[in-house]
Length: 290
Image 1 (cartoon, helix red, strand yellow):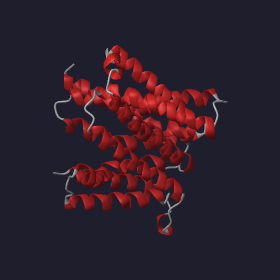
Image 2 (image 1 turned 180 degrees about the vertical axis):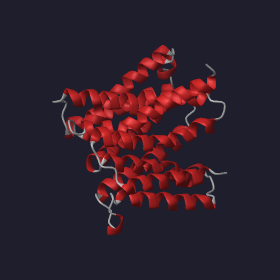
Image 3 (image 1 turned 60 degrees about the vertical axis):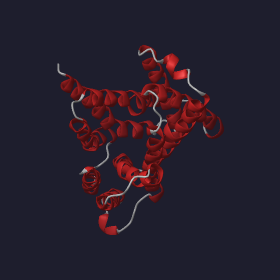
Image 4 (image 1 turned 135 degrees about the horizontal axis):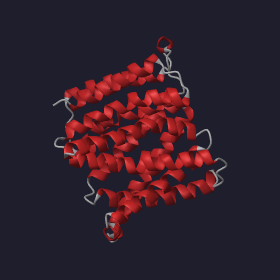
């Protein structure tokens, strides 16, 4: 098998798991509160990443770092997974899965605008067009099939779902400046996030998991939303001859996700959701056009 074919296999695995995760989160929240879900998923992801670092013989390089590297990891862990997933999973608890999942997709465009003050990059005129197209898509999705009502349903959930893209963008901007190995960074990020979420559980939730279904779905979320799927995608990007051959495939995930949501969550897919996703993806593509 050629490296390019291997890249497609790894990319396909990542897209498959990303397509299932919206449904898994929504079903899990029937058994756990959103804080418990972040707790289980974060520690699961840490264990998976720690084992990965061990197998790759990166444990020593992960922990033998300067104090300022630990401080950066504490900040990164606070942003993602701690704060990012608290906001995102709370949005899932308020919104249908078909609404929460695509609203989180606008982060590539948000990232462009945040890169101006933080990375000193310039905004091209097409970025404003991309932003407009994507936010029209956000409105379509938020209308939940009732476009002519001129009303956004569950506005707090919509704010959380779209706001999570801002948190992710900040995380990406800070993280891109850190030259440490990706797996090593993630191990420390999730270790700090695990401590943060443990303290939060003590104050506003509890450790009593009353459903085995919720527990195992939380583990699935940790493995395939937070941890291993990122490694699959990273491996695909390393093996591919050109990143465009792989990166464009990720736009298939939200459409596959709608099928999974309909079958396993039982949601009737709104026509506005489909059009909204098309608009958001179109906005991202416009932003990528050189």
